[in-house]
Image (tube, rainbow, N blue to C red):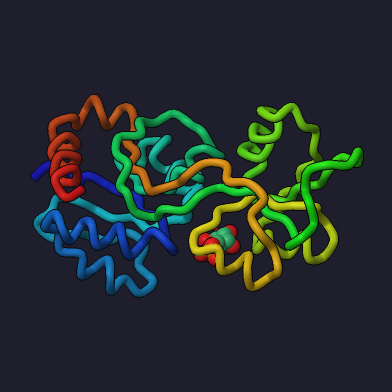
Length: 209
Ligand code: PRP
């Protein structure tokens, strides 16, 4: 039998919908759902192997060709860039990038250079560059909502899904930036060498969308 196609899935908010999608196209994902501490999971009879990883790592593994395919949010793709094909908008994991600030505190206006906290410095830089606005960007790894509350930043650029995290912390959206959803990405060499299998996989997915 041919070597299994290997797909890297993003742990966390995309995980359930991605496994749901694989089940919908007929894959038995029992081992993936009952993974325990195991990191590489077989899909019986599917000639597919699943790796669960953090979003940035999904891109790294696909870019380096150790995974043929990946499912990852457009937020991570836009931030990290990289060389791979982005084949399908999977339609789940929908949210948006937005600029937010403390409720009632106008972000725009005044002469002082604003400080913006974010997990996504590249997206933030290009958003403000497109406005011709000079800002100081502070990279935060965890809950970026803390930065304006602690007085570190005037605003944040982050993904907003339901808006409940902003609301619970007295913040509000100042401006929507761009919509985000989960994407199927493919390694460029795999796309050439395993074209038929990948095309079959993609057409199964497209039928469910
Ligand atoms: C994201 C984001 C916000 C929150 C927005 O974090 O950074 O904190 O979700 O979602 P909401 O609009 O539905 O409240 P996530 O939960 O992915 O965790 P993270 O901080 O580990 O990235």
